[in-house]
Length: 139
Image (cartoon, rainbow, N blue to C red; front, side, top):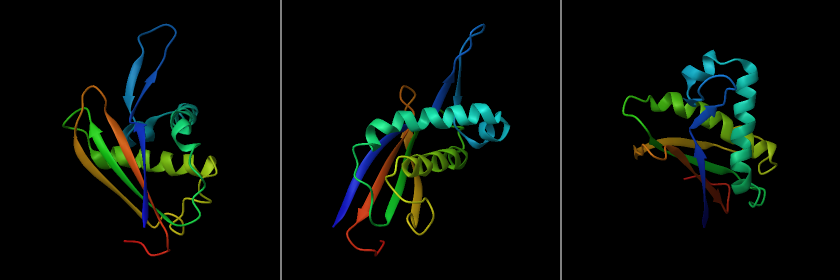
């Protein structure tokens, strides 16, 4: 038997400024590469806070899990691999920090994949599906 858990994660973050217009950024490698480390840490903490309400109700995973990221993007020219690189870094780190899994190595997460599912200009997001298996066999 496989237990499937769905978590919805944002893929955009709004930087709030005191003296100028706020700026919404896509969480992708181009931003991550160039961003100041303090902003990266702030965004990572925000991302974890957003997911905490959904994750905190889960029991810790005792077995290996599989993660499937399903993306709904805002624009056609978005590079899915660049978005996935950041989200697939932030999410496993969040479930480790929230003590839902011991580590985010392949020993605990041997299967991870991403899929583009469509465009959603109003609510771009990542829907993250976690499969928890009764035995240690992965499909």
